Image 1 (cartoon, rainbow, N blue to C red):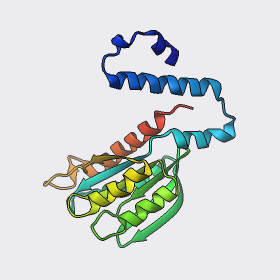
Image 2 (image 1 turned 180 degrees about the vertical axis):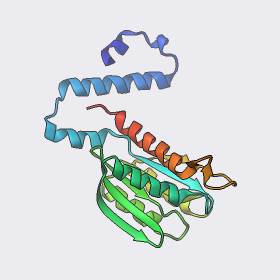
Image 3 (image 1 turned 90 degrees about the horizontal axis):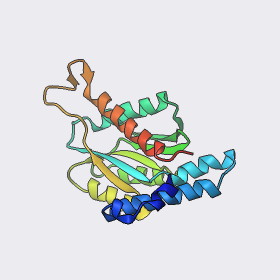
Image 4 (image 1 turned 30 degrees about the vertical axis):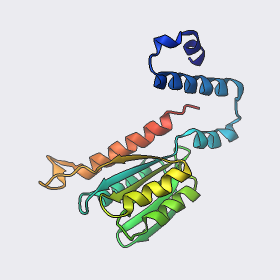
Length: 196
């Protein structure tokens, strides 16, 4: 597929972002073609090729951030995550584990003055390729998150929990659970982007 892109003239792709995408595809194709790793190296390769990402679930207090991330932890474990490290403080949790051969961390603590920065550092020390964390919309927590993520090569993606003033359900569906399912889908897409 990468070689096919090389045969198409540049003007067919338009802007620079398409050219960059084409070069990334070519680089990955050539890497795969000339570097066929044995089975033992595949896990390490996959871990290194996934874009390091921090997904921040940002919102005011009592909008479902912690509950959504607790749902996410349960869903990751249901889908095969092997938990390697856990910690808790009050009602908040840190969970780190291997999910689909990629290290993933979930930090439910996002309040100012809490353990968010410490737990993010622990996720990065554990070489998590994907970290999902709660983050308040005010105070230092957005700054703390970016201050920790950027220097360590993590891309920050910001989203919000599903929230309704009518309650935690819409019909018979828990909003926090649906948001957790969408976060799991996003994590799977980040991992699926690299096919080994």
